[in-house]
Amino acid sequence: QVQLVESGGGLVQHGGSLRLSCAASGIRFSVFDMGWYRQAPGKQRELVATIVSGGTTTYADFVKGRFTISRDNAKNSVFLQMNSLESEDTAVYYCKAFRGPLNYWGQGTQVTVSS
Image 1 (cartoon, helix red, strand yellow):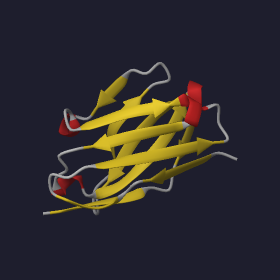
Image 2 (image 1 turned 180 degrees about the horizontal axis):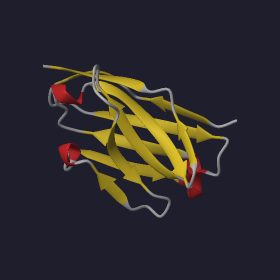
Image 3 (image 1 turned 60 degrees about the vertical axis):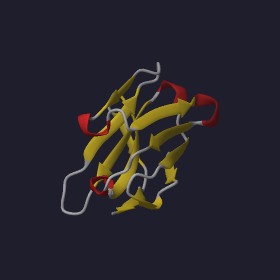
Image 4 (image 1 turned 60 degrees about the horizontal axis):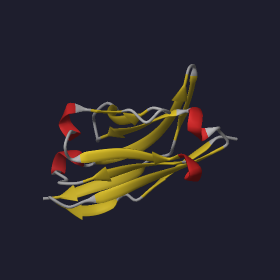
C-alpha cells in the first residue's frame, strides 16, 4: 500500500518561512520523481516544484528564488523549504510521486499566510 504523508503546514506571517515534509512508504522511493503541487480555493491545482530521481530540480516561475525542493532517499522523504511567503502562497500543498504511468498523491497540508 502506497502512502504519502505531508506535514509542516500551518499559519505563518507574510515574509515568514515554512518547511514542508512528505514521507513516502510502499514504493521504491529512490527511483520515483517527486513533486510539490498546490491548490488555492477556487483555483486549479498547480505545479510548484519537482525533483527527479537523479536530483535535478525544476520550479514554477512564481516560486523561483523563494522555495527549495530537496529529497533524502535514505529517509524516503521529500521537502519543500518555503521562504519569503506571500499571501498568494496560501493553499493546500500536495506531494506527488510519479514514475512512468504511476502517480501517487498525498492528502495535502494547509499553508496559510497572513498579511
